[in-house]
Amino acid sequence: MRKFALLSALLPLALLAACGGSETEVASAVAEISDAHISQIHVDFEESADPYADLQTAIEMAQDEEKYILLDVGGEWCSWCHLIDAYIETNAPTREAFACAFVILKVNYSDDNPNEEFLSQYPERQGYPHFFVLDSEGEFVASQGTGDLEEGRGYNEDAMVGFAEPYCQDA
Image 1: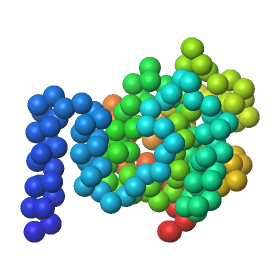
Image 2 (image 1 turned 45 degrees about the vertical axis):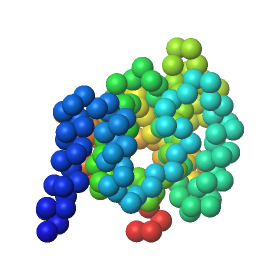
Image 3 (image 1 turned 135 degrees about the vertical axis):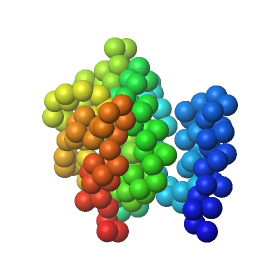
Image 4 (image 1 turned 60 degrees about the vertical axis):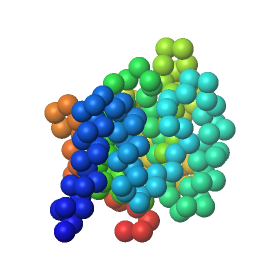
């Protein structure tokens, strides 16, 4: 019965994707299947966003929700940034682990706005996207290159869940 329910839920998604549905439309449809709500400050990497003000908002949310803050550093130019966003949205175990553990704050890094001053308080990044984990007070906890989470032209479920689960307060 569960297989039938899962297939019934996934069939419309497959049709949406096959008929040219955008990555965002497919991710939104998949998100409706999962009860896991991911708290995040921005859906996209916004060049005009103020990361200092956004961090204060993330701190308030993290304290209210008893979660860590995940700084997701990247840009709209970054194909891997879009891949990881879609993966987190569409892979149920990953989505649940990230929803349990983090308030996600996207921090733009681009030629027009590299946010150098804000990002200088964290370790050097080796590529993009890059994750920084902060506690609910906004203090640095960990740096995670996302290359370690990749598999082929995508991401590895065990690695993604394994990264997020230690930060899940409910575990």
